[in-house]
Amino acid sequence: MLKGTGVSKGIGIGHTKVLKNEEVKLTDFKVDNRENELEFFKKCLNDVIDDTKKVTEKLSGTESDIMNAYLMILQDPTLTSEAERLIKEEGYNAGYATKVGFETVEEVFKNMDDEYMSARASDIQDIKQKVLNKIVNKAELDLSNLPENTILVSEDLSTSDTAKLNLKSIAGIIIEKGSENSHVSIMARTHEIPAIVGAKNIVKKLTNDEYIAMNGSTGEIFENPTQEEIDNLTKIQKDLKTEKENLSKFIKRKSITKDGYKTEVVANIGTPKDMDAVIANGAEGVGLFRSEFLYMDSDSMPTEDQQFEAYKEVLERAEGKRVIVRTLDIGGDKDLKYMNLDKEDNPFLGYRAIRICLREPEIFKVQLRALLRASVYGKLAIMLPMISSIDEIRDAKKIIEEVKEELKAKKIKFDKNVKVGIMIEIPSAAIMAEELAKECDFFSIGTNDLIQYTVAVERGNEKISDLYTKFHPAVIRLVKMAIDGAHKSKIFCGMCGEAAADERYIPILVGLGLDEFSMNPTKMLSARKMIRSLNHKECKKLAQEVLKMSSAKEIKARLEEYKNSL
Ligand code: PEP
Ligand code: MG
Image 1 (tube, rainbow, N blue to C red):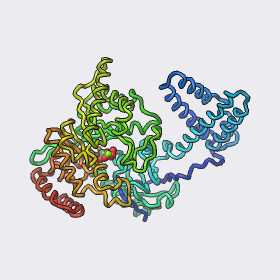
Image 2 (spheres, rainbow, N blue to C red; image 1 turned 135 degrees about the horizontal axis):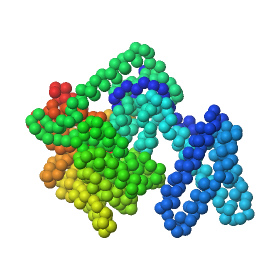
Image 3 (cartoon, rainbow, N blue to C red; image 1 turned 30 degrees about the vertical axis):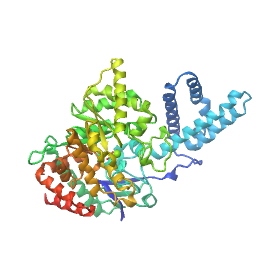
Image 4 (cartoon, rainbow, N blue to C red; image 1 turned 60 degrees about the vertical axis):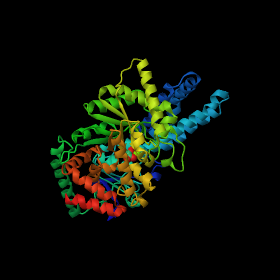
């Protein structure tokens, strides 16, 4: 049996769609359905037109004139007539037709005597490349037309690819790379899609349209499952459903321990559509809105208005509960193709998140304006990612104040009490927590990154994933420093890394005094159930005991034992 690591529980049964990098070839082949292929070609061309229009709108003067001329070529029917003919009359695939069709036009332009016109050949070449990029991307990743119950099999799924998926038809995800904390795993858990990562060579082993089953807890993959296997898996599926129904009684309950220690269980989200799950699972607020998903879900920078609408929707749906929106956290494993960020040898240590926002304040200010404008629709808090020093907080707050002044001057309303907090996800921030707490309104500990930076293990690297552990005593000590630092300044300290939802970890977090647990909406009810079963005084003792331990293995074993004793 094939196997990987289960990272999102649930049973998937269906047919595979294997995404192979080499699958899309720009060679000629004939298609069965010419109409569909022509539609596909036109869709790709229109996407390029839309992208170009968006870019052009922002320009002025000569630049705008140049782009408008480019747009005219792009929309001229003579540009596409040969490509369309190749598809319609000869049945070629869109990629080949684009290449050959556009090159024919390019040749005509090149041979023109008029210097200006012959120079336009390079525009056509450029357009051709853009359309081909769309074709290749779409053919690989436009999964909107997949049949129901598709199990997606891929070497990897980048965060931006993940953001574009149409999840409704997906019964499961299996990937070769990744880990529990890759963004694809986080997304799968939010949407309750069974997922397996680290399935070695799976892309080679499986072919398209194979009937398979998978278990997102155990990581098992069943090729051509027998009836007995299907029966077993269906039974597990039913049990999971019953478990979910039993948890529903915690939807309206408080997140409070048996001896009265109050906490909050709130949600991590990536897009406004995640609010369905947030509401269905009784969140006490949103502890982390990963705003970068808005950027990754788009082919160009989302405008201020687009962002405003998204934040407003989330704030309104939260009905007065606190919504913490994290400002753009791009870089590292989260790429934004249209930003054309330079390739770096160590992207996790490089140009990312707040570092970009402070160096490119025009990008930051668009987001801050959108956030502040939306703040009148609910209880907004702004969170700054990847803070490594006090100066970054000061610089960011200065920009926030500038934006507030601009809005005031324009008489645009915003909530003057919007809180500003920071992620504690870099060891230097945890170590300096006491000082940083004086400069902000709250902390949220991002263990996903804090672990990788503390133990120097990349979060998505499956080869060394055994070393990437929240049970490392250094990580636990940094968590304690962050919580204590926050409490000294009487600000709250939450946690929005995946560790906040781990039932082995929750008791020690309660013992250390964590105020807010932010997690995938689907995990909130079991976390709340667990918190309600705990005794704060006992958890404090447990925390004291664990803080004296020095081996991650022993700490893990002790916390597992404690959980099982409950
Ligand atoms: C974290 O690092 O723990 C975190 C919540 O942020 P992200 O996973 O988006 O990097
Ligand atoms: Mg992070």
